[in-house]
Length: 634
Ligand code: COA
Ligand code: AMP
Image (cartoon, rainbow, N blue to C red):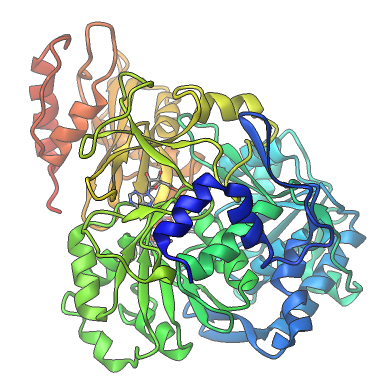
């Protein structure tokens, strides 16, 4: 096998050769004309002219190759007490039949299908069934409120929605169907059909003509074959937070995605066909798309679909049980999950009850892996703990300790080195033409073209793609992260350069929350920042100035604001604190000093800019924060 250094250098010097070789691992119904089509920058195309089917590569192909009796997917649900295993042959049949059901409803190639489901096997079946018939899925995380769902319906214009009657959160049933009905009511675009999976825990009422029962649909459907699609055709759209309340529809193509994800399974995660891989995330996030569904199946692995939480379902030993029971070789989760376990079982006493002898590596991503959490996880698991860095937009890791080549020394706080295909530079935030020297912080950018599998554009919004990512640093993709590269080439990802915060590994826009607060009748001005949180990494913290003449108790307004964010964005926002203040700190030109407010909330030293309107406001803010318990202990 080649070394990391050889492959990394080749991937940049000869992308056609490097990715052309990687593409031979995928089954194509028509070979590509060109590996990288670069004649129309900044729009690059991978494997143009090629045709394939992603579902075929995930399922049928393995059955044909003799993997039919191997488990493809294990559903492990401490929420319901169920463990169900599906072989490659069984999963292929389920997907082919459900795809037949969708086709019977008139869904065809290029149509969009919105999926709003919890962590049940049918969610993966729905995604793969769309891929099978060339429909473009867009999965929406269950923790989003109807308004967020409606925004996505209006942008993607799905012909069909696939939903579950409910999701299960500890101690409560979340009825999805009324949320879906509410969203369709709010949306301008009305999907023609919906397919509802009725779960035992809650039976949803159905709207005749539009809603179809999942079981009835498959009972009368005939399996359908895979439809070849162009490598450059979209496989899915995944909406992610941008710098406003309007989410961005990240597009993923079929060809580049299949090639990059399969390549990553061996080279980044060191997972071979037949081995068991577990990403403890949710199919609503990119991690779930890439590493619960597509990558492990492309690689012929067994993937775990876990419906539960790291703690409380039933205890902080759940992860160890799943690793033991299913002989997991490597798992992937967000650092926040390990902080949750550490909080409840600081000495990891529960671990000794389980046999983790098959377990080789823990991968962490989604937020910066803090050194304390890494050390704690290393000490209790006694395996390498690998921080790696990526985004919804890239779909697979940008920076990692690529375990398939052999492990590089770990530097705590660093996701290690750039992954093949990513030419990473640190650019001066004041001068887009200047690169920072080793050790100096700047905006992290990736030289174009991005490797296969990354976003070719935003859904029907080429301008938005250019404006959001490519305009500021010509010739580069702006990641939105700030950080540095040290003398050894190690990456350090320190913070976002925009308004995005990471709450329990979930990406949220504070701008979106501000829009909601500003919509309250008593609010004159507001600001939302991400404050340090011992469990979730960050949690949103709102400041509001009330309109003159509002004569209500601050606590009442705060309560309404918390409820409003939950109603408009959803519980996933974890918006729990809105502080009423007399004034917000601003520069003389009216710019709110959110960065300074965040530092005060986190108990960090700060410099008030010379342009501040009135420095006394900072004292007022410090007092309000102190009264509310900030800085919090972390
Ligand atoms: N449907 C409906 N509501 C949901 C939901 C879903 N699919 N997922 C979460 N929620 C709700 C939660 O019940 C919670 O509601 P509450 O405010 O009434 O308590 C709220 O959204 C916030 O959820 P979350 O941030 O996940 O907090 P939590 O306290 O329920 O759990 C952790 C905290 C750390 C245990 C959990 O976030 C976790 O396991 N995270 C790590 C793994 C992960 O999923 N990472 C994502 C990307 S890798
Ligand atoms: P998402 O699109 O939800 O995957 O969020 C992507 C963002 O999460 C990145 O732009 C980073 O800000 C942050 N992030 C993800 N992984 C890491 C990591 N390993 N270290 C630091 N930040 C990370």
